[in-house]
Structure formats: structure tokens, C-alpha cells
Amino acid sequence: QGFTIGGARLQLSGDGAKHDQSQTHQVLRQMRTELEDILHFLKR
Image 1 (cartoon, helix red, strand yellow):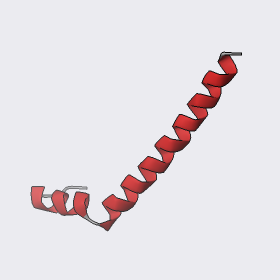
Image 2 (tube, helix red, strand yellow):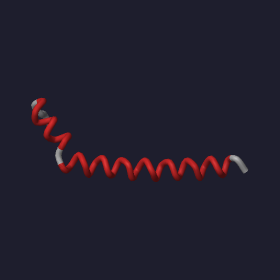
Image 3 (spheres, one colour):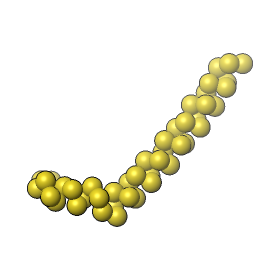
């Protein structure tokens, strides 16, 4: 899917980008929690 530079900027700054950013933060928080659980398990 092609975008002009202006169209890409609109795509990246729109509501969809905010939702994607929120989803990314949620995934990263979950990943961090899981990695901390693994680290705790390995330290036993």
C-alpha cells in the first residue's frame, strides 16, 4: 500500500496510530511481566 509523504504523516498521527501505540504499550508491559517471571524462576 503506497502513501505520499503527507498521507503517511496523516496515517501515523491519526486515531489509528494512537490505538496502535496503546496496544504496543500493553504488549510491552505483558512481555516485561513474563520476562520478570522467567527471571524470578531462573534465580531459584
